[in-house]
Length: 278
Image 1: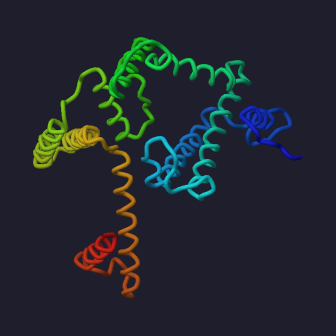
Image 2: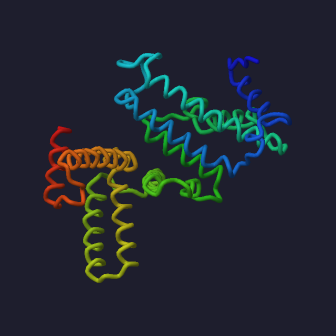
Image 3: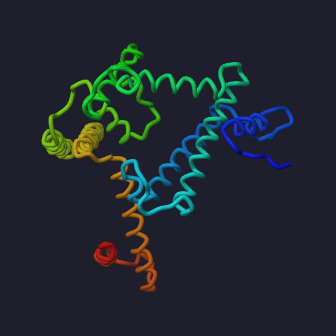
């Protein structure tokens, strides 16, 4: 049987068939909890696909300058968005089986929220820049969810660096922030000095405490510089992986195992790999 996926409704019907009696045994065994890891994985794969778009991922809205609809990067991006959409539909259909809601209610809910949170578009509120838009968004969100507080909406499962930067952003929207990057840069130096003191004392708990403060301060500095700390670290990880792989190849080409090389030799391989990147 051929199933046509022409629109969102067909996707809903397909997932509904998978979950129905006589559908897919594996799908019918799944729960919200068992699907959590797939939801996280698909979100990460969308982020990877965005990174693969290169410069196009950072361009403002408008026509593409390098990639077309049939380029591999674009097709992979589209596919990964589809996989993520399937997760939303799957969870919605699991909820429907419990009599809670379906994709229709999910879609209606977010549409209504977008209208409420954009009174400068759908109402008569005036704004002059995106900063005012974000400030209004946080004010409206706080009124809607007053019991949660400014940071209450941040998911506990966010990566720690991402949580720290988002916390700084949210705090800044209610006026708790430095005026420029000089403040957090000075704070980084202050926290590193306190880390050095903790290391000198040798207390593991104090070292962990101060190291956390250093990392948190670096996230604030990244935010004030207009950068994303999580992305910066991910790119640093990729550079390390690439350079280390080069070190491994050079060591192997020498006919000796890495453990048989001195640190000076390995460091020379590393510097060669670094120079090649430039």
